[in-house]
Length: 151
Image (cartoon, rainbow, N blue to C red; front, side, top):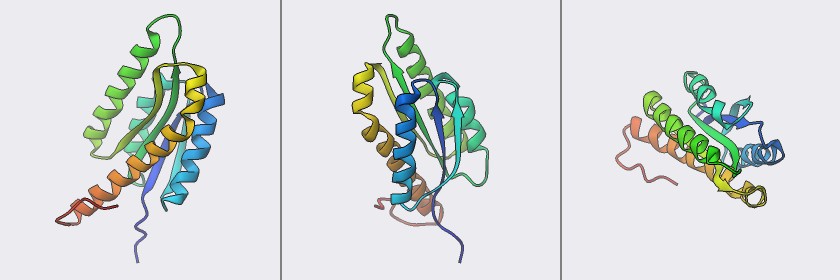
């Protein structure tokens, strides 16, 4: 019988790694809980580099969906807003281009370091949950199911 588990890739930013490495740990743990297989972890220098890594993973046949993890902390300028908004738009565009789910597990913009620490669990697990659910529902739809409201 063919393995039907969801195979995912995770792209994680190394910038603010005191936050993102904890996000990665929780994301991997939650993927296992959901019976999804993490096929690749792609570490990038910062959140700005996430879209290129997402594109690389989406081009692989053994990846059903991609989870993005990062923390864009507010500084004295609007740089955090520019980065977070552009990355969100680009990963959404890539999801549509490759017809595979990409979830947004990026804390910010506007978050302080303390707020980001408080959101580690929520953002990482929700990102995995979203990607896996969408991949399962899309698979079900492609297999001809008349309903895609699958838990």
